[in-house]
Image (cartoon, rainbow, N blue to C red; front, side, top):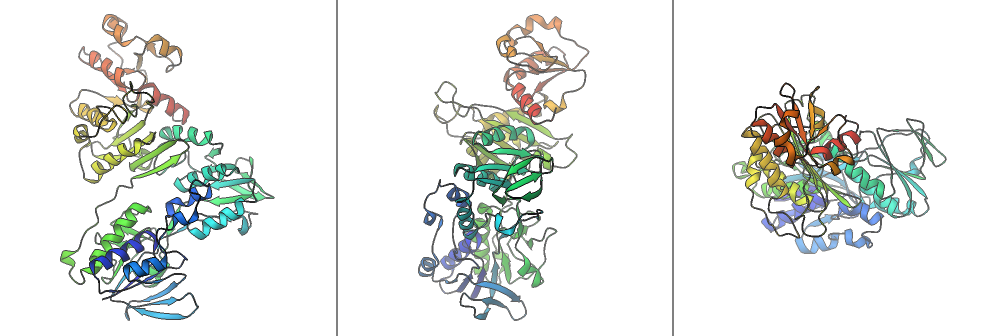
Length: 539
C-alpha cells in the first residue's frame, strides 16, 4: 500500500508513526512544507520569552531521526501543490525545486491552519508578526532583540502567552482584544476578571473592547483615540483552516472552509482521510494539539484497514478541553462558555463555586474559581476554572463527564484522590455535582447576580466584620447564627436572596427559610461572584 501524508507536526507525524507500527510494509511518504516535521508548536511563546531557553528542546524529532526510526520517506521544505483524485497522485515541489507526482493508494491530509491577519493602515509588513511555526518564532525573536515595545492583537491563548513572554523579555507590551474579556472562547466576562488581574500583574497593558485603527512611526492608535507604543505588532487573531489544496481537489468543505470528515476521519473521497486543525468532524472544529494527535492516530488506523470500513475506528467527540497559563494562574475550560450559547440563556442553570485548592487547614491554600453551565434538562454544556495549577485536574474530570454524556449529579460521586496538601475530602468537582443534585431534589434554587429579581430582599448572612469590608447595596445583614431568632425581620411577601462569601452559608440560610415557607433563593458563588460580575460590567 502506498500512502502519502501531506503535513507533519501533530496530526501528520503521529499518523505516520502509527501507520508504520500497524503496517511494516506500507510505502509511506510524508511531505512537509516547512523545515521541521515534528516540533512542540505549543511551546513557541515560551521560547520567545526564554522560559524554554534551548530552541532544540522544541524539536520532538528530526526528519532524519524519523526516517531511521519509522522507515518513512520524509521530505521537508517540500510543498504539495495539487491532488489528482482520478490519477491518485499528489504533485509536489521538492526542496531542490524539482516537481514530482507521487502516487498513492491512500492519502492523508494534515495541512493544519494559517494565522489570520488583518490590514492596519500605515503598518508595514516587516513590522507584522504571527506565531504559528518555528520560522515565525525565529523572526519574532530577531525583531524583539531590537525593539522596546510590542502590541499584541488578540486575547486568545496564543495572544496571552505571546504578550506575557514579550513582557518577560523586557518589552513594554500592550494587549488589545476586541471582545469584552480575554480568552473569550474559554471564559465568560466575570470569570475572566481574575485572569485579567493576573495578566496585568505581569506588567501588560490590557485593553479590552478595543481595536487598532492605524499605525505610524512605532505608535498604534486605537479606535478610542488612545496611542500605544508598538515597535512590532503580533497578530494573534486566531487561525483559519489551510484547506486550499483540498478545495482545489473538489473535496467537501464545511461552512468555515474546514475539510469535512466523518467520525472515521474520512473525507468525501473514500481514499482520502484528513486530520488536525484543517478538519471539521461532524460539525465540530477544534484547533488544538490534543485532538490533532488523536485524530492522526485514528486516521492512520483506518488507512491501515484498507477497504474495510465496517472495521474502522471512530473518533470520540471532543469537548475543546484547554488550559492557558496567565501570569501566576491557570485558566482551564471545557465545552462552551455561557456567552457563546446563543441568546436563549434564560433556561440555563449556572452554578459558581470558590473552593480552596486543598484543605484549608494545610498551609498555602488558595481559592479556585469555578463555573458550571447546564441546560434546562441538566445536561452539562460547559465549565470554566481560574486559579492555581489544580484547576487543570478539576476541568479534566468535568471534560470527561461532558464527553461521556454523564449527568452533572454523577460528578458528586466521583472517587478522586485526596490528601490535605493536594485537595479536599470533597473535591471541587464533587461540590459542583452536589449542588446539581440538590437542584434536582428541589433543595436549592441558586441564581446568579444577573438573575436577582427586582424588589428582592437581599439577605447577607456573613459576620459583621466581613460586611464592613463591602456588601451588595441595599442588603440587610443578619448573621447565619442569628437567623432563626430574627425571622420576624424578613418579609414573607417578597423574594429573598440569601448570600454569603462563596455560597455555602447562603445555602444553609436558604434551607432554614425554605422550610418555613419563605420564597428564597441562594446567590450562587455569593458575594465573590457578585463582585466579579460587577467588575466585568455585567451589573
